[in-house]
Amino acid sequence: MDYQLTLNWPEFIERYWQKRPVVLKRGISNFIDPISPDELAGLAMENEVDSRLVSHQDGKWQVSHGPFESYDHLGENNWSLLVQAVNNW
Image 1 (cartoon, helix red, strand yellow):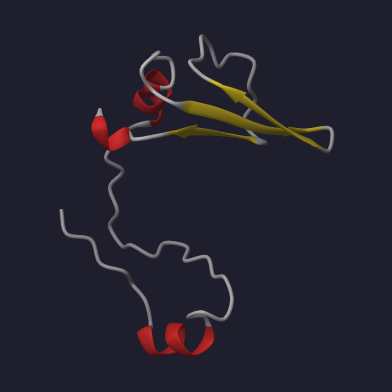
Image 2: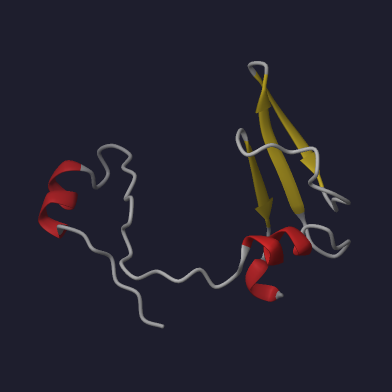
């Protein structure tokens, strides 16, 4: 699939390029995620895959390294699952 940024290039260059960070929400129109959340979580359970779980609780950041056995203890907020080299799997 061919994705293109929905971006006002002159404005981007003038305001942001090498000047300050920017978040491009919905920067790619019609984006279809190539992997589901369940597939990503499943990869993080494999020994061969490098993964980390970053969470923020009670004002403190924590990181745990995979593989993971379960995600049942996680709520809906304050955590991110990072999985390396997903394109290899």
